[in-house]
Image (cartoon, rainbow, N blue to C red; front, side):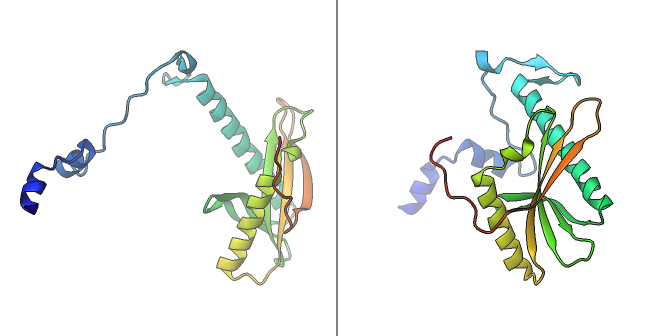
Length: 183
C-alpha cells in the first residue's frame, strides 16, 4: 500500500525543479506592481523604487560614517579588530582595541547628514539592549579577560563640510534601559 501512495504523490514545483536541475537557481517570484511601488529609472539604467533609492543612500551614508569614525579612532591610537561584527541578530559597527591594548571597545556609529540633527539620540533602549547582549556574548565566546566598553560616536556629515564627531565613551552600561511601551 505504501508504494501506491508514493506513486500518486506529486512533489511541489520547487522540489521538481531542484531534482531536475540541481545547479540551476530557482525562478524568482514576480513582484506585482501597485501604485505604491512605482518604478523610476536609476542612474545605472536599472529600475528601482524611490524607497530603495533612499535606503541605498542611507546605507552609503552609514558606511561613510563608519569609515570616518574608524579613521577618527585610529588617529587616536585605537586598533580595528572587526567592522560590522554580527553575532546572531546583534551587530556592532566597530570593535576596536585601545592603544594600550587593555580594553576592547564596541563602537556604535550614528551618522546624519543634517548638521542640526543629534545622531546620538537615535540610540534607543532596544539598541542598548542589543549592544549589551552582543558584548556579553562576545565576552563569553571569546573568553575575554580584558574589560569591555561600549561607546557611541555621533558623526555629522553635512554636504561640502568636513565631518564632525561627538564621542561618548562608556555610553552604554550593562544595565540597559527597560522596555518602553510608547514611542
